[in-house]
Length: 155
Image 1 (cartoon, helix red, strand yellow):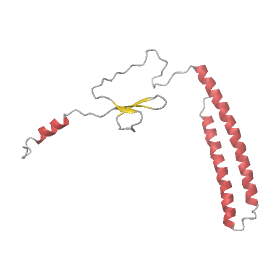
Image 2 (cartoon, rainbow, N blue to C red):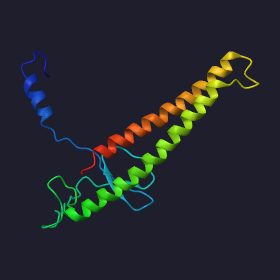
Image 3 (cartoon, helix red, strand yellow):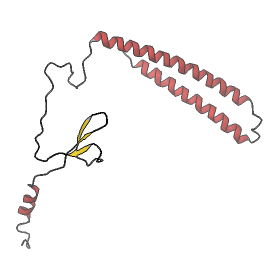
């Protein structure tokens, strides 16, 4: 019996030295992808692995086309072609978004200048105009984001 605390540090040290263990589950989804986890998953497609089962790891083959960060390497010409395609797509999206912005600005201009018959209540007019202003603001943000993305592309 440990009453006076003389053996308390030895007991605590012994408790800390006990091996830690956790359950490991192998889960397979509908597409056949396998995932290992130590958190108890839903029972569908998961099974508890044996504690004394050995775990093998297979190293990546030598000479694989991977950079130091783990991403595949791409030769310069391929990357340049991808950047050109990306710029072309972004330029098309930018032109489309600028056209939508102009249409939204025109709709706002027309909407501010006239009140509709069912807008006897001034708040209805303000709500409609605010929706038009919000639409203009969304298109302006989209144009800015596309311009930022295009400016980040390599020349």
